[in-house]
Length: 182
Image (spheres, rainbow, N blue to C red):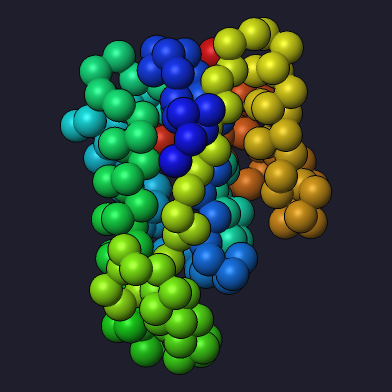
């Protein structure tokens, strides 16, 4: 991985995106989104990650994170590895998952094309962290992140989407995760 794609100053907020291989719409089911949310909670409480903003879309996740204790790249590696395993396990055990066979076949195929995997590849391999080191850059990315569900036609307003920090920024309500507001 080129050094230009590594987080710089870990204490500055970084915009990162995780994308599911093949842009597969896995996160259309709340059960899988909840696994990712619970993983973020664990990282906030135990790994020193400061979560500033987030959104889970149907096939990708956007986060704005920083850390004073650990490495953002290590956080990304760990959460991707854990959520991959847990989401696939949940999918395989979900009797109501109508797309199970198709999704698992796609993930197995993607895994066979990556020498670093044994069985499945869930997330695309790389992430491209963008350091948000100016107020303007932060403002643009924050608006983009929170308007993702609106542009996708999932909700009318950013604060209506449950799996996002929009409610924390646009209302006086608290969303699903503890944030360090910026």
